[in-house]
Image (cartoon, rainbow, N blue to C red; front, side, top):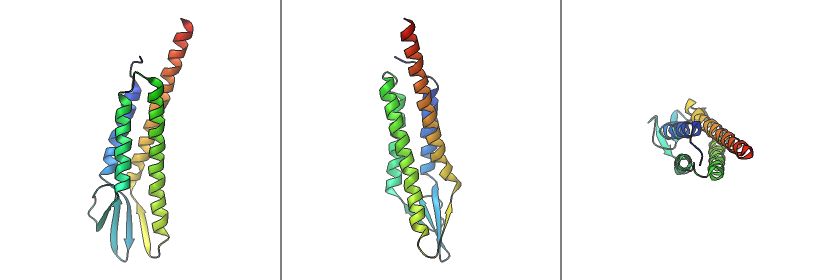
Length: 149
């Protein structure tokens, strides 16, 4: 059994960042003087708000997997695998947001303004990567300790 250390803090920070991101708009579209907000939940109330259920489900999935990952400390290999899967889902969410932005920008007359809140999922992925690195350091320390025995 491995004693949890800094990776739990990293995972918790990643969860907090994703939950905060759910409440803010990712993109703002402007078409003919009207503004449309694109986000996981209703936010901004600038004009017409588009709630994206896919983005909301991905945010919930990333947060729940990271929360589950905190409690998988008894099996370090499984914890590392789950963390890696969480990183891949986070990257997929960012790619999906970029695809929506590119597809909407091709429409004539639409001006897209990315919000600064888009940095939150990127920071969340960074903290997930830091947690994965801490887990691999723990695994290395366990191998070294086993070799000394």
